[in-house]
Length: 192
Image (cartoon, rainbow, N blue to C red):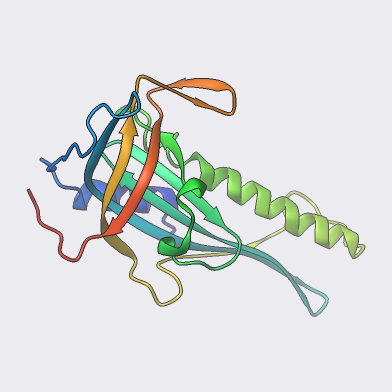
């Protein structure tokens, strides 16, 4: 049986489908100290589930991961526990995980690995609360699918974000972080 890791799958999808010479627009050039850029992007939704079946009971955890790619190497991620379409997720819930050529595949997708270990810890806590002795080698059933809630596996979008040399987030300065302003569905994707 072949096993494909979800992070590798969606990074390859972006590599394959992204526009090579994207048309960028600058709607509010240098407004509020930041440049705003509108450009094409791609958004995917992963339905992730983790479960263990013991003594006629299922212990499980699930989440949706909405991943937005734009600007060749910019990645924004929003994780929801309730099953929302990406268009229903608040713009503030998407956070910028990467903007650099050399690490967008690893840093940009690091939330998937963190989420897996968090979901695993939640399931283990439930199991132990019911008196099960669990080892680190307990077999978990893993399920992931691209697309959720009857939605398309991916959609082309128009993304507007600010680009600044420094944006302050949580009291810490991060160089070159982008602040997301809007995500709009593209009716038709045009390869530039």
